[in-house]
Amino acid sequence: MKSNERHCMVSRRRASAFIIVATVFLVTACDAIELSKISVTLWPLDDGAVIASADPVWIEFSDDVRQEDAEAATSLKMFSGSVEYDVAWDGRRMTLTPTAGWRAGASYTLKCEGTVASTDGRSFDVGESVTFFAITADAPPVLLDQAPANDAIVSRKTTLSLTFSKPLDPLLIERYVTTSPSCILSVTLSEDGTILTIAPSGEWEGLTRYQWTVLKDLKGKDGVPIKEEYRGSFRVQEDATKPAMPVLTAVDPDDLSLELPLASIQKGSGILFRFTEAMNLESFKKELTITPDLSLTIREINDHSFVACRSDDAWDSGTEYTVTLGKGLSDANGNLTAEDFVWTFTPPYAPLTVVSIMNSPAGTDEVFEGAELLSTEPLPISVQSGIMDHTFVIEFSEPVSPAEAARLLEALTIKRVFPLSAANPDIVAVLPLGDNKVSVHVSGLTLPDDTANGERVLYKMTVKGGKTGFTLDEGNSLEKDFTLYMESLKL
Image 1 (cartoon, rainbow, N blue to C red):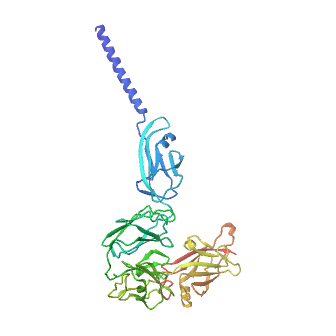
Image 2 (image 1 turned 120 degrees about the vertical axis):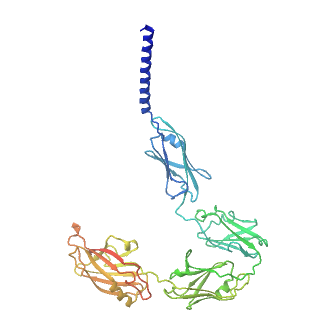
Image 3 (image 1 turned 90 degrees about the vertical axis):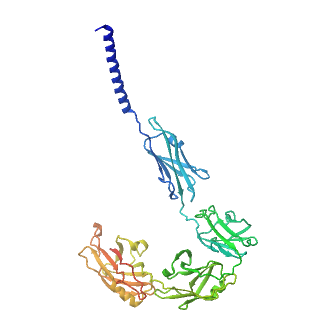
């Protein structure tokens, strides 16, 4: 073999060896290179989420990053501009807390966008954002009622009346109430701030359809904006139409936002009459009757809504009542109804409940009430040693007569639960105390021998409920068994 041929073969071997070494080096180097990307998690997780007033927001990275880079890439904004916030780090999580708190109902955007370096020098491009809303503990004002009804026909001097669930800010009402076509308005609030009245400075233009708007920037007296933008319309014409039959609902006289169907009326409820137009109050009072005969108190909410309440007593469970608005009822323009409007309803039997239990001797817990009556943990009752008795004064939600108290004795049991060696106590007497209270005297209770060693004596009081349980003469009964666990303690 010639010398130059041998030289070429050696060169080819060296080149092959170099390629193999280079390949091995490249594979080894690739194994050492971190090719994964950093991931970023934002909270809230979903667009449109609503967070509580005390909640912060946060950004969490999947790897350790330079905090100054992460903070520089982060922004928190609302419609009016950037939001100032405090930053706190916990491992890879950066928490943002707004210094001035969240604004109720406002839309916020949390964004992490830019270049972020890991602590070992790698750089990553990130781009994540989420839009969310915040609320406060205070509910926004809500429109409960409006007069006249949408697209109603009204006279040129008609006043608009909007009833809200909470007082409005009197300094803002003129700024955020508009009409189309535009006109000069007189906007006022009722004394309690809940009824917004809108009137023209003179008269509405005849044969015109108006639209009114209450912008959502209007705030309540506590600073919380109204729930949404409200709109309505009406047509200005002379009213020659007789009043339509109103809608009746049962309401809490102290909170008109709590409405129930008339068939579900409660003992202390009032009846809300809601008309589609302004009515004559004196005519309403004259034409309204309820049988069986009873005394009524009538309150005007606005010119088309009235509440009637019993003056002397509560509605009787199981009694059928008839409500009549007689023919000749007049609206505000003098138009009269040509027929009677009649409704009937029967108040359902109110469920009987245990309101409280007073203990004698009082001991460490004189009265069981509220959440204690739902407790599954034994409640302490003091027992006088020697006499070994205790008296419970049970207060029910309805009055209990002597005959009904006698029936309570049949539905009431007090039995020992632990230890089995303890005897069941005796119910000595059940006596009505007047109003809603019944005294239950119990004897033969047992005290633990050695409380220092954790000994306990437990009892279970049960008042049977349901259809076969304790029921009053009017039909009120416990919806289910009332159960209470008790522990005897030495006085």
